[in-house]
Length: 287
Image (cartoon, rainbow, N blue to C red; front, side):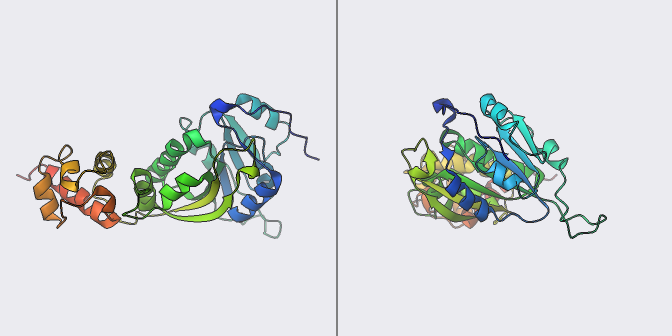
């Protein structure tokens, strides 16, 4: 029998809101674990998702910044859970994960192993959700290791991730995520799904990683460009682009973009076109 979780006073500095068991079961069902899955869990907390996920037999690497929560989980988790005390924003999780082997289904012969599929799950702290999401995108760009991420986030963040061009929510986070992932909203959770109750509503989203949805000529220029444009989103496209590209008018003309538009109206393909034009202009001439 699994040991009872010790009492823990939620810490505001870690934005701790613990998921109720009934909702945890729904989230685990939404994850849809399959043979061969290896999970990275960010912020296991008191184990609401960790324990039922581990009960399926899948290896779980659980990274928790609160050392007291780690100490409380140690006697409660089975051997297929690896607990790491630290910050997911700074720890290099890749060596831990690649050393984990998926569970061999009991009906398989000893010589056959299911193909490993690396997946991310987590109830993300509201105050760190955006940097953690950017960290995941960075992992994907560098390693192309993860298949998907099933995450609990603030409803407002889910809106930003799924926002379309021309809307108020459309911006740097959503554009970066939509270039590298396909995003679906799986569940909406009320404040009562957590203890203590947050003042905001939450959503469970699934981000499926894959090749870029548009071709980017230069990832570094792409990152800098969207930050430059959306730091001045109420300006016209021409005026927002000028500090980043002194040849803004010529660049916009070369990709047939009207400089009177607002940055928030740009489709992903149009942003990719701008990146390609700026990258070509910055490329040293061939002698």
